[in-house]
Image (tube, rainbow, N blue to C red; front, side):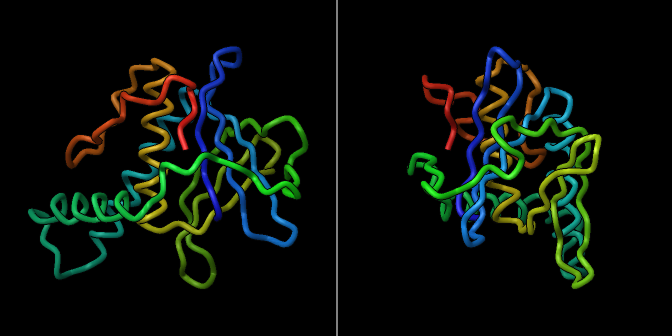
Length: 176
């Protein structure tokens, strides 16, 4: 994954998730997220983050939230949210000009044992991303800011503490 972007389209009343992938030539995924699917994506990411920490037998249930919070702070510090989203000039939209309307979200394990986030439409078309705590925390931040910009009042706050700036998406409606 090269770059992620979440923006709100008031005419569609949906979030638009755009992702560029490092294939050759590069590709761009454009996915619509409804309010309902945004809430489901949030829950899936929260569940994933809790389970990845929960897999480590050395971490007690009492310390789980603190570890996840530390990982969140580290992931967000290492992410670049300042560079504007710019798909490569030769990036082809995978599904054509119209974004794909996501209707199903799953966290899966690949045959190799890696975690993946699958976002699909009713027909089974979609995107599958290699998922890591870094990506999950970054995507949570972007989705929370996009939902706040949409004024959906979903209360998307990580269960382990506040997400500074979630309600302060920039005035253009773009969150990078």
